[in-house]
Amino acid sequence: MDAVLRAAVIYIVLLVLFRIAGRRSLAEMTAFDFILLLIIGEATQQALLGEDFSITNAIIVVVTLLTLDVGISLWKQRSARANRLIEGVPTVLVANGRPLKELMDRARVREEEIMEAARRLQGLERMDQIKFAVLEVSGGITIIPR
Amino acid sequence: MPGNAEQGRRDLHADADLAFQIRTWRVQRVGWALCVILLAAAALGAFGAGVFSTTTAGSPAAGLWAEYARFVRGFAPSELIVHVDRRLVAGDRVNIVLGGDYVGAAELLSLLPPAASAGASPDGAVIAFEAAGGPGELRFVLQIRFTRPGPVAGRVGLQGAPPLETRHWVYP
Image 1 (tube, rainbow over the protein chains, first blue to last red):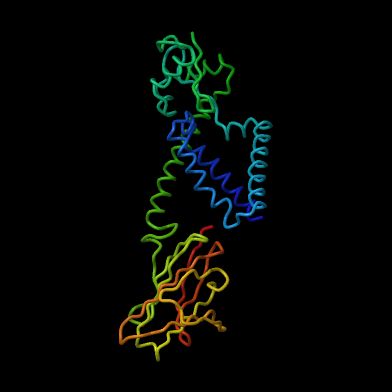
Image 2 (tube, helix red, strand yellow; image 1 turned 90 degrees about the horizontal axis):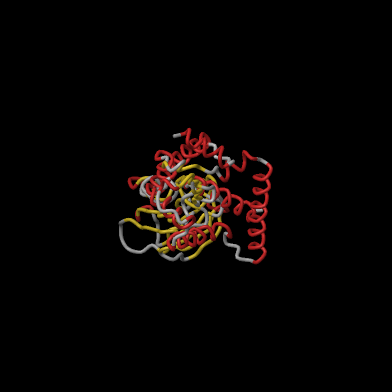
């Protein structure tokens, strides 16, 4: 029971913390973000396992985490509200070539990042060639050309 | 601006609810502020070693006092330092009694100086130390770790004398 509780608490705390951190955090993985993820994994490992390093405990922890993940994905699938709450919603950052500055600031996205996505995904050169730039729930930027 | 975003939402058939997103950003900012408060509290000792956490029981004037951490984390080492005035000790042995929740909610990791012997009494675990030298203060460092989360009310003192009461909060 202890292992199940530990895993459930860590899962929920990480879910809330990453939701608070925002979708831009760890969205576009840099080498440092990858290292950060490894450190977070290391930091939570001991709390997940406690002092019990047995195979049984590891299996209980893994099964708890996977069951919670499946349960939450089912909940998200059945409830649009839960999906929004857990995943967030896409945000339009550029509409008809005009950057929506206030929304970009709140989403912590710079014009350069939008232009980078425009060049990379659509081969666009200028902001006015973008019909919509959308910050997706995954943290990536989607570009719809005009 | 919201008009342009709204047009985007319609044209893209996306669930881009701007009002919800703005509420989410507000909650996120509150979350960031809470994280900063949490870190400041941690730095000051609200979750373990630090100025808020370190406290004492008893007083040097009474000849017996203990320093300990009010806030500790489960399974993390913590120090209980017992100070005894040599004048309170008859003979060359100091018998320190650990009672209350210390028996059952904590484990003894190490002792400095090492114990001469250990045993049990109705008041708790009795640890005997050699006491050498003339008048002055004797200092015993007990490294303990708590195995049960929640409040822990311990007792520490000299055998045959009223114990000091200690209060810990153990984080899981």
